[in-house]
Image (cartoon, rainbow, N blue to C red; front, side):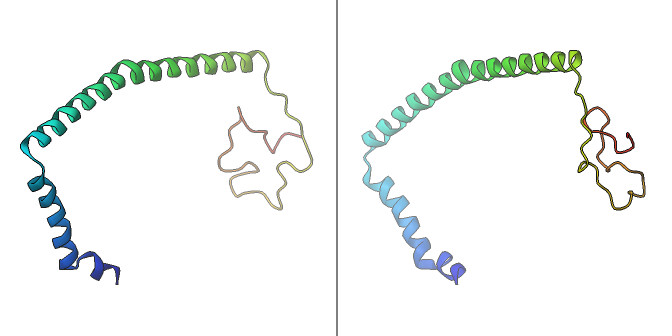
Length: 115
């Protein structure tokens, strides 16, 4: 049903007419004014992108990297102490590759083999 409405020849003709109508009713002076305004706006946004956005992204990236380095350094000096709760690593039966899950990482996860 939607395809019938979308590809209806009357709808397509209407869309074509509105585009033709705009270009035929706008004078050459109006079209030139629109183009010059668009060129100025495009130039403004190009300068904003180059001189504001790129340095802001660089500063944010540097800040994120510095925060990561501080956090990593703190983790090295104060390693995580694992607490063995009774509800962590509860298994009805072990996986066929062992007690730990498939995505086990010894530096991040508590091993199910440790008692």
